Amino acid sequence: MTHKSIATQRGAALLLAMLTVTLVAALASAALWQQWRHVAVEAAERERQQAAWVLTGALDWARLILREDARTNQNTGAGDHLAEPWAIGLEEARLSSFLAADKNTDPPPTLEAFLSGAIQDQQGRLNFANLMFQGKPSEPDLRMFTRLFGQLGLPEAEMTTAAQRWAQAVDRSAQAAPGDTPLLPTRVGQLGWLGLSAASLQRLSPYITVLPERTPLNLNTAPAELLVAAVPGLDMARARRAVSQRALTPFKSLADVSTVIGSTEEPLSDAHHATASRYFEVTGSLRLGERVVNERSLVQRNGLQVNTLWRERTAARAPAPGQASSLQ
Image 1 (cartoon, helix red, strand yellow):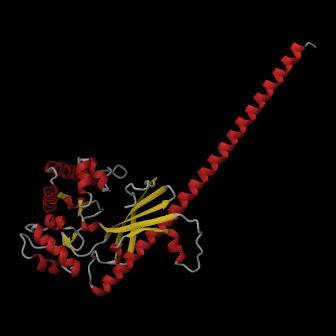
Image 2 (cartoon, rainbow, N blue to C red; image 1 turned 45 degrees about the vertical axis):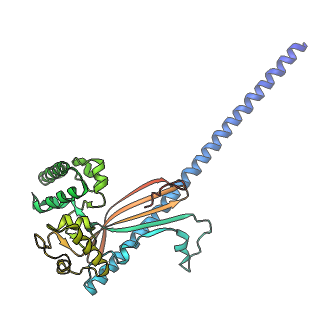
């Protein structure tokens, strides 16, 4: 065998060895990636389940607070106001601090989970569903919304269009055959279906809501802008005075409100005004490392029973240091 043929064979063997090593490395990398992906998916699923458990517990805790508040109100005759325990939000706190309060629980030292939340009275806002009453447009409620649009500097034409489309949608829903009922908005963000612009919805979001039935405005929790919108003839100065007065002595009845605000163009009525509430929105946020899970729930309180009507959950990445938090 010549020297040249030996060198050729050695070169081929070396090339084959290199190809074998490359193939083994590629297979090993693929197996390692598959294993890493499986671990990552399993970890994400575990975090999702943990977040669901914690947020469900937070919702149950909020319902318990509202139930005990109802019990207290029954005993004292008080209304629902912003000085009650349910109205105090939970600032972001380490979850292990809650577990440490239980002497039977030994929380893991590496638990990096942070919880925050709040309960908001939805009857402290104008209810878009009030625009229809017994199958017909409600003129008093339409005037309330029109006054609110005027205070916020929003185009009245948008309000008129949205009210008309809402009436048409409700009418179609009432006449539709079973299984063919049109979808009505159930969230403020969905009112864009009726022609309200994104800018208008953003401005309106602290002042309006969409509830499954007609509801009076709680004058104990509504901001001054809504007092002016809901009480014909009430000016902003008297509305702000009423807000200051109720912070010291919450209203127990509409008679208490009338005493504070004085004479108006129309008397307060149970159909449009109240000092207590039945609908509340519960929000909760759980931060696990770089992930944030947010949940919103609408609950209805009937006596001492608090039922959850809907829940929605979204996930996002935690904001970088110095950026605005998504937990509020």
